[in-house]
Amino acid sequence: MAEKKVIAVLGGTGAQGGGLVRAILADKSSEFSARALTRNVNSDKAKALAQLGAEVVAVDIDNYESIKKAFIGAYGVFAVTFFWDHYSPEKEIEEARLIARAAKDTNIKHIIWSTLEDTRKLIPLDDKRMPTLQGKYKVPHYDGKGEANKIFMDMGLPVTLLNTSFYWENFIYFGMEPKRGEDGKIYLNLPMGNAKLPGIASEDIGKSAYGIFKRGKEFIGKEVGIAGGHLTGKMMADSMSKALGEPVIYNAVPFDVFRGLGFPGADDVGNMFQFKHDFETEYCGARDLKFSKSLNPELKNFDEWLKENAKKIPLK
Ligand SMILES: NC(=O)c1ccc[n+]([C@@H]2O[C@H](COP(=O)([O-])OP(=O)(O)OC[C@H]3O[C@@H](n4cnc5c(N)ncnc54)[C@H](OP(=O)(O)O)[C@@H]3O)[C@@H](O)[C@H]2O)c1
Image 1 (cartoon, protein in one colour):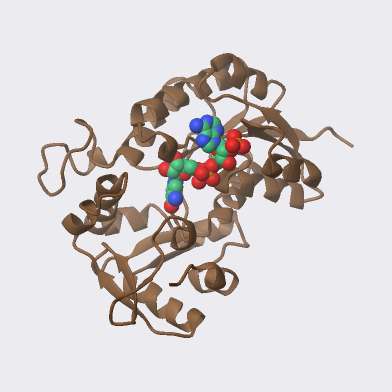
Image 2 (image 1 turned 120 degrees about the horizontal axis):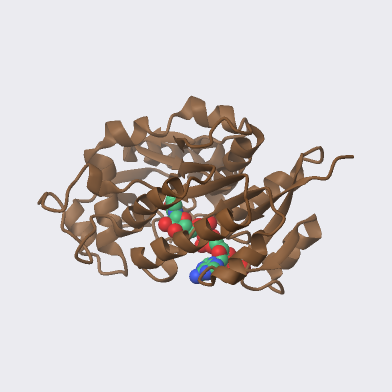
């Protein structure tokens, strides 16, 4: 049997990378094998991946030599950065630069960069609709990733730029779950007006990345986007009502109110929602559902995701 082509997966123990590692390992006839990269090869998550058959290798994504070592012998790389660990677009850009250099120096044949739009292309810094943050960004956790796209392209790397979507798991783990009001009713509080929000089961991001690797050269040099559904707040609340067996009411929070909520990154996330709202056509258009399904036939829609996950939503 021909030797399998190794895919080195940054964030291998996390949401996006973990989905890719599991997708590769679940496909017994795969032409690929999975190398999960982690800061701690002894963590429970890392051990669980090793048990499933992944090669588990240590990496420090702020150290070029460490990344290079982790990429040696690999055919492909899945690259993701971790904005919410530090809130710094500059750090993400610098990490992207190290990753790109290491991919170049180890002759990687295909790299997928998990990215998001540089929102400043559609809403320049002098546009007063939303505040400018950290001096030079509109949506810091988007703009840094989008700015880094150029690094991969300019280095002539065989890159696919993968625009991801809002994880529906945010309704479980990120404090965005529907909440009971003082009137005893359950409210889904989101600043999306009546616009559609592209969302996805986070596990489907890795499965889609696997679909991209399987299609060989087809998406090299291209920018693609994925989502499992485009839903308004009302549509999501209606689906939640059915899944939870209790009415959930959509509450369209004003953007400024959301930005002022005071949790770390509230202004960034508030601008993000306003961007998705104000540029609904462009943002949804960049995440075609049929295309996403073609990459990953197991792609879940919101109702399917709820069927498996509604019980995990921490309703108080
Ligand atoms: N939440 C959303 O809706 C959403 C949507 C689209 C895009 N994103 C983006 O997704 C990115 C995060 O990806 P994810 O959700 O897959 O991550 P995640 O699940 O939070 O974490 C991924 C893994 O990366 C490792 N890690 C964390 N911080 C690290 C660091 N500073 N250096 C090296 N490794 C680190 C951790 O593994 P070890 O401890 O094993 O090293 C962790 O298990 C963010 O940049 C975010 O902007 C999020």
